[in-house]
Image (cartoon, rainbow, N blue to C red; front, side, top):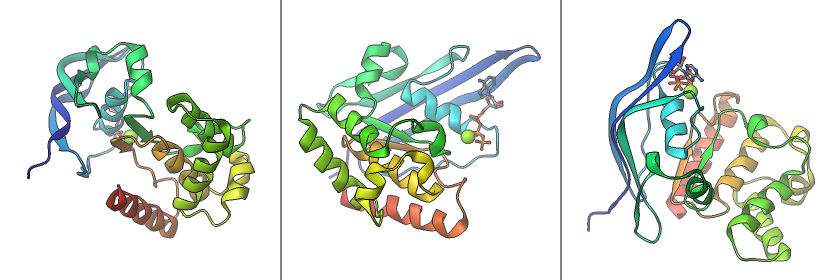
Length: 211
Ligand SMILES: Nc1ncnc2c1ncn2[C@@H]1O[C@H](COP(=O)(O)OP(=O)(O)OP(=O)(O)O)[C@@H](O)[C@H]1O
Ligand SMILES: [Mg+2]
């Protein structure tokens, strides 16, 4: 049986007006992604990979101009949504539950003043009708699933008390905690050393196989 599409990007072009002229960040990009499929995007620095990711998540900077294109996303209930035309409320309700992103530098996406566990619990409580006890159990399960040696410690830790690789594992746990059907990872390992890079990529591969 052929799997159905999860994401369809068609003829996407995005520009940035700058004082030195217009920057063409993405030019006529099209690709389709099926459910369960992994797509790797390769390109030189500045070729528009991050801008593409942000446009899917609805997180483009205000000054970005979408010149053309459509980004169709198929929700878990089967409905199709053009992400570029979706309201900010709609996009907010999709983020976490239907799609999630792991950024290059986890220190920028984790809030430094809150403990890691609480941040994951918050994401779960936002999207799922569940109580704090269940959200905590689920958080600890996820921290174990991303192979943090001591999930209880990671739960209680502030982001700066963890290593870069551990923080990225926390981010992956947070991204997957609400079972999104789309996970976008924008160079999730480039801030890490080579051996940690390999273990994080293996982790993502294994998690995908279990999905
Ligand atoms: N906020 C912005 N304002 C102006 N130009 C921007 C902005 N964000 C991105 N750009 C430009 O858009 C283009 C694509 O940037 P993008 O960050 O998507 O590249 P990338 O492929 O992710 O590169 P890297 O591999 O270095 O992460 C670049 O020319 C960049 O300068
Ligand atoms: Mg980038």
